[in-house]
Image 1 (cartoon, rainbow, N blue to C red):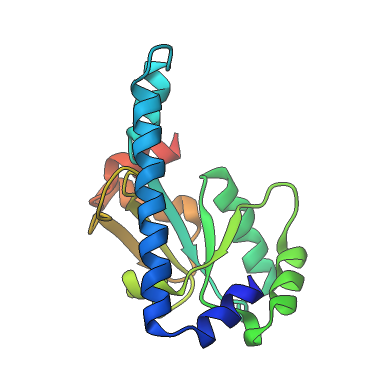
Image 2 (image 1 turned 135 degrees about the vertical axis):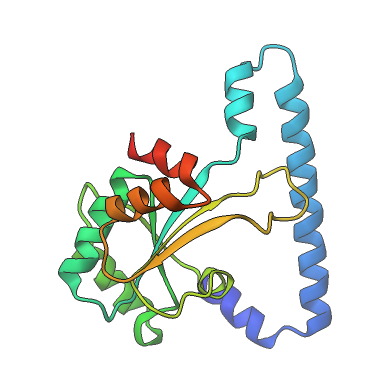
Length: 180
């Protein structure tokens, strides 16, 4: 990962375009091969339908500046609802500090965590915590869906946010399913 970051910093825009075109070509080949395999004899139809069905994405936008106990609580609760904690970059620009934070707030019942500054921008998240429930694009879609989503800002439990979405949100069906 560090090598990729360094390469990205020194690569020309022409090199980046070339690399991106190779990555896109390979993604298309992979998806086409997977589609062919899924259409083949012996591939379970319920597995095929499950793979093709976009799933709701539950993201809890957080910051390393939040109290550790609150982060720990969100991590445990997000695990129950298949959610993911989303950070906006590295704490103080340090992988080591991120690792220490993850180790401090993690246990066997902890949700996945990721760094995704693009998601912060895409959902207009400028306050943490913010909870977003959205529709994911199918891996077979050429373009990601400019999707429907529900969002709530502030210190609210994930269950309360899902209940709010289930009662009043655009994602009410998906929120209701997650609450079951």
